[in-house]
Length: 102
Image 1 (cartoon, rainbow, N blue to C red):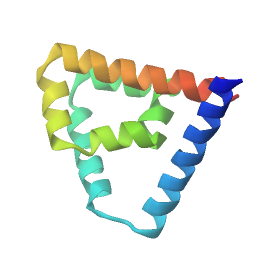
Image 2 (tube, helix red, strand yellow):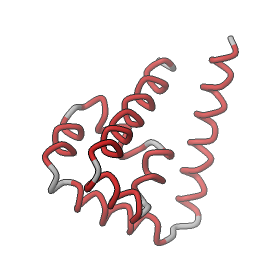
Image 3 (cartoon, rainbow, N blue to C red):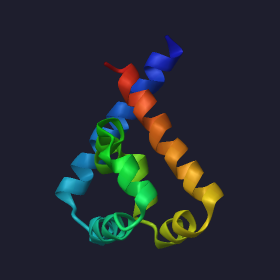
Image 4 (cartoon, rainbow, N blue to C red):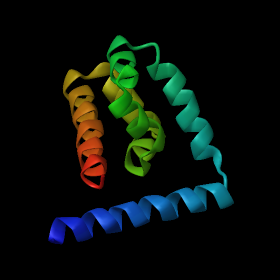
């Protein structure tokens, strides 16, 4: 039961974040879009994005989008295998949390 409460809170936070982003657009979204274009040049990212399970998470999950809005994070995942694997695990973990809701 406790994990269900955590998932509900996480979902509510995602919804609140989306509402705030909608009401107060900022430059983070533009950075995020620029970083996505850069990552699409990477074969490993294309493979991850083409998987329908992870595509939704990449484009809609608050935590993943926040991670991808950081220039520092983009540099790390494009240059360091360990950081790249950590990002892939983040996407997969967020998908697992999301899929438990349904």
